[in-house]
Length: 115
Image (cartoon, rainbow, N blue to C red; front, side, top):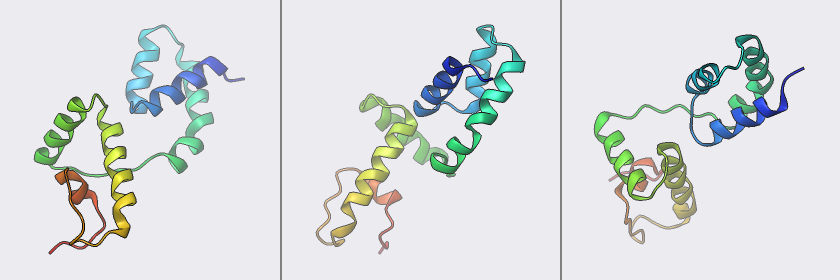
């Protein structure tokens, strides 16, 4: 049986943007046995990958701008990206002419056509 405290910890760490490798390292360094970690991650595998995982490639320049914006907004990098994407989706009903972007990064992640 999987430890419920361990499951809660993994869920919370993922919610805060930590990847599984970092979570495993933290748990191992705090004395959790490997034999308990594998079943816990397996139990949460479908929950995490099917609902919350998106992989994107960012060049160094965009990544630096995102990190700077995240620090300014007191967010983690994943929280900042999520915020940008959420605002981009909210703005999809506006035309390009009507849109006034206060954040260049919203435009980078937007699905709107570029001219």
